[in-house]
Picture 1 (tube, rainbow, N blue to C red):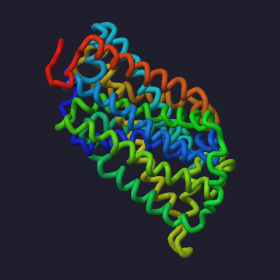
Picture 2 (tube, one colour; picture 1 turned 30 degrees about the horizontal axis):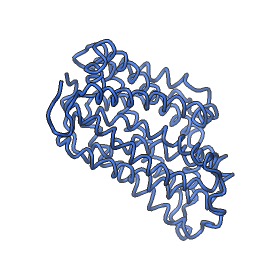
Picture 3 (cartoon, rainbow, N blue to C red; picture 1 turned 135 degrees about the vertical axis):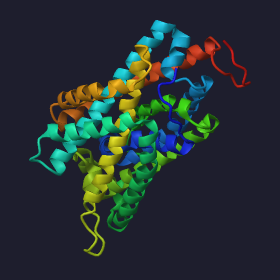
Picture 4 (spheres, helix red, strand yellow; picture 1 turned 135 degrees about the horizontal axis):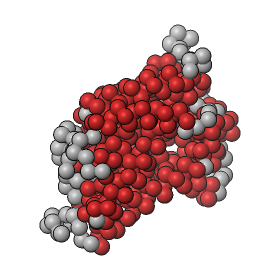
Amino acid sequence: MSLEKGRLSSRQVMFLVANMVFATEVQFVPALLTKYAGQDAWVVVLIVTVLGILFGIPIISLGLRFPGKNPVEYGMDLLGKWGGRVLGMILSLFFFFVAAAAVRELADHLVIAVMPRTPLVVFIALYVFAIAYGVHLGLEVFARACEILYPLFLIALMGGSLFLFPVANWELLKPFLEHSPLELMRGAVNMLSFYGEGLAILFLIPYMRHPEQAPGLNLKITLLLNVPILIMVMLQIATFGALENSRILFPSFELVKMISVAGFFERVEAFLLAFWVTTVCLKVSLLFYTALIAFAQSVNLSEHRPLVWPGAVILAAFATLIFTDIVQARGFLATTWNIFALSVEMSVFILLYILALLRKKGVPKTGETKE
């Protein structure tokens, strides 16, 4: 049962998934990595690049085993009707939680860095309204927006960062590999917990015009995420130093504030902030959409759109209450988030993948469907 009539190109899926991870990762991961791995944080990014490619292969393979179906639907095939519905509710609650957390983090950022006199609830209400409107219009609408805006954001961010290379102190990246493998892996686990949000690709593969192109997206998405993050992490360490970078709430924002060309081209952070706000909006749109689809199929609804506006009210309320302030949010990301996110992401994927193999469900490599 498909609740969405839209169809996506492989390019749109690539940008949707990459944007969903990168939009919040670019603000929080560099500081978290330098907390764990210091000046070796960039090494962690390289480790996660390899792990991301390796983990992406079976994830996409699982989605392709069940053509035209998302995890809730083939969860019912593998776990039975009620088992699949429980799985769908778990996924719905998880994506809804991540959406609310992202909304709150963005609203906190805007209050702290841009408009401190504006009440937090104003940003949350406006933001959730825009998200709900986009989700109500449909998957294809915000997929097209993401296809345009995410590449522009990357170009603007990377282009602006080039002007900081001459003033960066690259000696701050030394000594090389001073931290232990355990510290590097702690950073890698934290970064992978953000990558696990990419599990939403399993909800997008059924809507691809050419799902056979999905395996080729694995490497593209990983590089599209990790090359910019690698540059940002190295630049931040070379600019602020690892210790100071780990203490800054929004190091990427502070970094772009330093961009200056001949004393004339300055204050570009407002321009980049507008792009970032838009990309986070698109990220939350996909998370909210995925949560609604999973919930609708779990309770056997034929349409997810009637859930959009009631869900938006709950999303706004939850985003307001989820954290007391940005300090608590930062502490959550540094500690509890790793265990919470990976336990849901990995357990759901491993359960479905192993059951699909053991019960020989889906489409095996021979292309013959087995029941």
